[in-house]
Image (cartoon, rainbow, N blue to C red; front, side, top):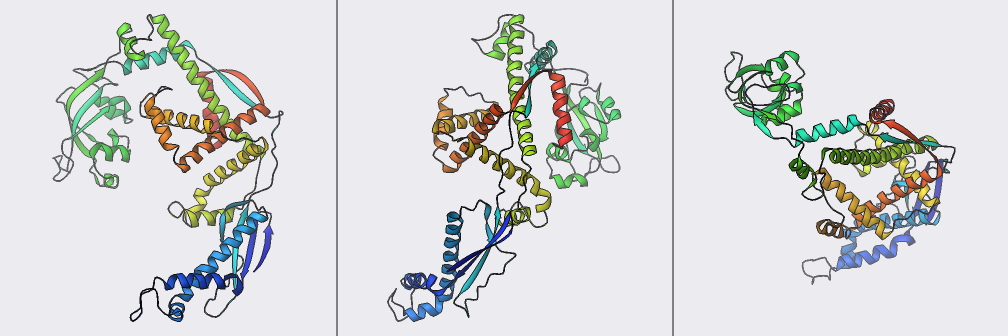
Length: 461
């Protein structure tokens, strides 16, 4: 066997493997003997078919499979022994032609393209500065949060006349060009909406002031602000069928409801905070809300530091990648996500993720960042606490259900690797924070979000 390497540039190389007869003949013969034991041939006992017959019938397919295995094993060994830092997996070469004529040849040539990881050193130091926002919670934020909570915990009650924030319940019917119910169209479909959410001013004004049993003809697209998804979900029709709707609809108002604002009293405090650990006075309630908001915005500021840190790492490590190879590799390995027609427009997100991974790996290698078993378990708990919170479930640190869920998932290798990766990312980012200079900056909630929105606009996020 002969193995050679053609280096096209720093990021692209081709490995050429020439497989000769003595590299595969013994393995092919062993495999044919195995196949013989499974062949049934009339006139012979099972497994006793003539070996020459087996060779004629199955020899070529066995040969093709075995030379592929030999070449693959040789390639993996070559990569390992030469410590090649490759990205993705090798692909059949588009630069050097393979020679695989099993009908006429006994020597075969395999050519594999490899994408190489860039060589670089970490470029971060204490000369790099990250702004850490100390977000100041004012009375305004406390007032707004309390008002929102009071509305959320308020009761729904019937009202006679709709105002802008009231919920209007109505049955919707599609009309034909004669303003009569359309045969086969949407009929008396229950729906609900809020007047102030309607962007069309004339329609919004016509909804404010409606009463139960009121009848109103309207444009269905204006009512739901030309949002095909909302219209299809509301009317229970396929999204592609929205364009076929007649725009003219009739609503019959069935009820109007208004959410009242909850009173600030002991019963309300217990409902919000639970029957034991709840504030007893409005002053205590405001202090509790401010403390919760301060904690929330502290977490928000921490996450934003990580976001800015990601940008810093990208800026300090302007790495080149074997882009064309990686595009080929993505199309070959993820055909359900990428095709030759879509890879160019979708590639940037994969490229960014790979660059971030390369830098994080460099950090973890340099500073020996390794996840412990306890790290992985704690990360899994954090993962599931966040997941359950999305569904409105609150998990305490000693929750048995949480522990059972985590223990079960930690028996899955793929999940453990996922959690280990999360730990490595977090610890690597924490290490960078120890190296760079962190500048603490007080900022109001309003100015913080102005900064965030400006940043996202600048970076197209």
